[in-house]
Each structure stands twice: as structure tokens, then as C-alpha cells.
Image (tube, rainbow, N blue to C red; front, side, top):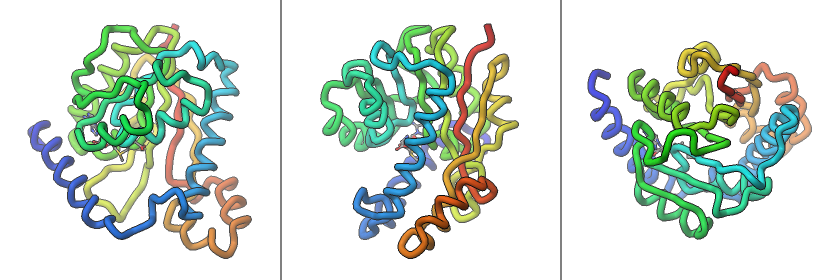
Length: 234
Ligand SMILES: C[S@@+](CC[C@H](N)C(=O)[O-])C[C@H]1O[C@@H](n2cnc3c(N)ncnc32)[C@H](O)[C@@H]1O
């Protein structure tokens, strides 16, 4: 992919096509038990990781999600105690930002490109990136996004990263492994955990064998995502 603009155009087209494809699917519906399992397990892992750092003052934190989509991840942080007015989100897709605004009317949500964040340097305590980077194929776009995240992050702030490393079914995305995460954020300390039992396996197991799904996830071998906590080195 030689032109970053082409990559962003491709991504917008892919999201429009995906919306069509999933029109009659309940795969991402809150009433789908497999989706519930995936979301519940992920939230537990995020909480554990944040607690393990001893860093819990979320009520006073300014939190920004890049690629916030419809705002579901920002809502997790609202449940964790971040006031709505301290939650910020940006996304390339106007329609998604509008939807996020319906559930988070008191938050600051904007239609923007993460390569050029409309915020001051060192404005945020927490930066979130949840499956935005894997939808970008162009290496230069990803590097620019990472640089912007570091710019707006306070020196003692944290980046929370959640993205998959392998998805053979979707050629419009590219999984990201720990070595690439470390390359994107040089001069940072990075704590990484492999979480989330691969969703196709969850969809098979949850209706009949939910305990097996939990057990398998604990083994981590079939887990498809990395959850990382990234901090600037002192
Ligand atoms: C798979 S969705 C995830 C949405 C949300 N983070 C979540 O987990 O529910 C990825 C989102 O990243 C957004 N995105 C990708 N590249 C972006 C960029 N350069 N600037 C802003 N948003 C971007 C897409 O528009 C899309 O809404």
C-alpha cells in the first residue's frame, strides 16, 4: 500500500460493506451469549491489568480513545468510574461518532483522523486503542498514529492497547504481534497479555460448553488478542 490516503479510503469502503454484510446478523448484539462472554471476559482482564499497576485514579483521568467507533469501549471506562465529561473519542467514520454520542451525550466525540489528533500535547492520562490499528494496512499510517498517541499522552500516562494478532478470515485487516507493538512505541515499557479465546471457537462452545470456553481461554494458546499496557520510559 503506497499511499496512506488510499488506505483510509479502502478502510471506509470496507466498513460500509461490512455494515451491509452484518445487517441481519446478531453476532455483535448484546443479547448474543457468545458476544456477552467475549465482552465480559475482556472487561475482567482490563480491570485486572489496571489494578495490577496499582494505578486506579480513573475518576480524575482524562481518557481518549482513538478509533472509538460507536463508543462501547468508552462506556467500559465510564463503568470503571471515569466521568462522562472526561471521556473523549475520535473516529474516521462520522456515522459511528454520531452513534457514540447517543450513549455518551456528555462526552467529547469528534470525527477526526488519528494521524492528526485535534488535542494539545500531553492532554491525556489514558489513551485507548481497541482494534483500530489492525484495520490499517499501511505501515506509515500506523506509525504516524502511534506518534500522535505519544504526543497527546502525559509523561506519566498509559496507553491501553487491545487488538488481535491473527485473523485469517479477514484480508481487510492485519493482525499485530508484540514485536510490532514495541516497534510502534519505541522508548516505552510494555506489559503484554494474550487474552480473548478466538471468537469462532467461542461461538461454537458457548451454547453447550461454556465452562470449556473459560478453561481454554485460561490456557491462552488459542487466544486471538493482545492486551497491552504501554508507558513512556521515565
Ligand atoms: C474495529 S473498529 C473498533 C471500534 C471501537 N474501538 C471498539 O472496539 O468498539 C475500528 C475503528 O477504528 C477506526 N479507525 C481506523 N483508523 C482510524 C484513523 N486513522 N483515525 C480514526 N479512526 C480510525 C475505524 O473507523 C473504526 O471505527
